[in-house]
Length: 206
Image (tube, rainbow, N blue to C red; front, top):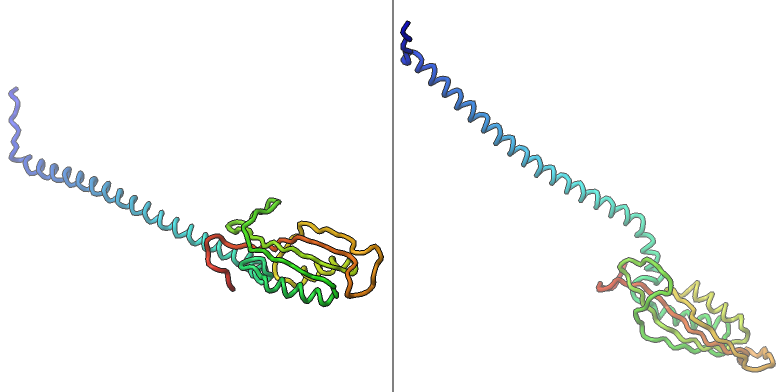
């Protein structure tokens, strides 16, 4: 039996429609893939922005917490004279008043220029640097206990923090004299007045 010839005129429309449908489907798939890629990139970009914003918010929240927790202590230390500029006037005025109150017959001092120093013990001071002003105290006392009274007044009234490096005692006269104008004990002390200051910043003020 002879093969029948296919009448392509009848199938032409169907083939064309099928071809168009295939091309449209391919185009839609390509468009869907392109749209999906764009959406993923946009999602990643927005997600990164969200993460950055969240991290910044958390950082601000943490800074606010730190400020609330430590700022009162910072203010206290500043007003106590440990932070910022040295309080030389307070030290000297407190010494004079204490000498008059305790009735120290002979009180002389020498205060040297401030210098940067390092502590003999480990202490985390962050971005601060330690500065020290050395003071030589030369005292003529009625009784050796007066040095403790003097240091107690400095502890209580003088702005700032100090350490006593050494004190040397010597007897002026073997016979104890109750005359308030004549010292019985000579005391030479070396003190370091300490302050903390931020390196490379302007003067601290509140």
